[in-house]
Length: 317
Length: 249
Image 1 (spheres, rainbow over the protein chains, first blue to last red):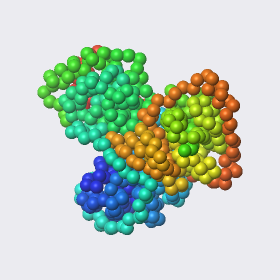
Image 2: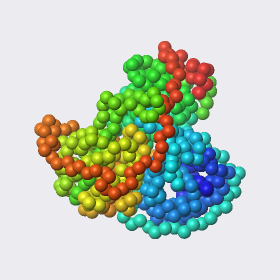
Image 3: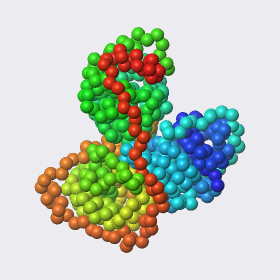
Image 4: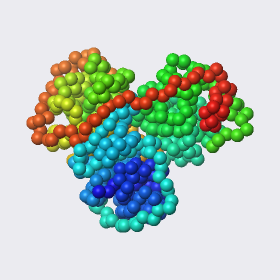
């Protein structure tokens, strides 16, 4: 049997984590078919067909798919599921919202947020905010699996030429109406895929002070992250939150400034390759995961950090 | 409007999780347990809606072993009117819980079902969506703002790209984000009063749903530990290390 990959896109382009999900799908079975559901999304469908791991693209277009509502997506995917052993999607807010709806219709127990494919029916996944790893075997005939995108490398994005097959849309679900989406536009790299992330916590003390984080991020070409405490306090918007209930990031360099390191925050960043912590409390838990810890007042340390960066001849971007 | 709120008993979020030596799970004996944090937000929101005169009754429900009833009692102390405890032993997967909730919804006929967006023990993030599917109701997941308008809700959802607003017709399911509200503490008089509020006990086996696990947990292990790092003396040393030792900038 084959794997059905659910594509995340914005009707024009593939969302980057689709490539990571495609890699995970191909580790389950080499026969990966990708379904793309949207409105006027043929450009994105074409890009999907160019992924070498994708063997066939199923394209479904209708006006009621424009905003990716789970209530509209689930029935049409359930219909397709007949031909597949696995349904795979990213475990971001898109996949988290959608996949359980599909799994319930298929009467299958979903395996959420896997970080490793051990075999086609056995997966590794973090539980308790990553404080334990569970090896889970699914005994269901059909398996619904969401994958943690940062745990899989993105697949090649060019060179393939899978056939694109159009599939008929299903009926509209009329009890849910999309109103608006407020996407925060930024010229900075995306938090989930950035090479460097600079994050601020409650220690920043105000939204204004986040400018200091912004300056460093600009200098390093980094994305900006935040602890839940900083988001809850209104210093910065929710899309920057790193942690158990926010985004999981695995950058080459994670700089945590004024973040104490609650378990829930560590869950979102402790797999980063190099971790720097700047905090005036030498006992803060963040230092237990930091490769380089600096015990200092951040309001003194950040300007000095900028100065030192300015002295460097080159900075990798 | 009647609101059913589902709550789950989990290891308290401040407890350092320890894995059992035999790899069969995590240690739960003599460990502090609490209501799953976003479930507290779900209760709080229901109570606020009732206080605003837009709901008539709040029913708190939990599914699980004897002690799970504590979470219902806590919900009663912050404003739920009555409770339901569906008794079940052993591991219950979200699919099983959603089937149990479906049976209770069929009987109770609530207009809204609220619960946390995710449980912080298994981190599955499935039950609300599964229940919506089984009932064929609209779902608003990761809710950070709810406006009740007659027989509709306008819900702001936290998504990866920012915020999304949708309108859903009642009956509906909402899964609550931590930023939806600030859960209140129960006052002592209210805790006393809650002891008199009724909790109906139902055996899961009497509901006629198959709750047997479909997943096998083969092993639970500690995640790989990070190597201990070093403390640097000053910013200059930090930047020098990042440039020349870690080679990341």
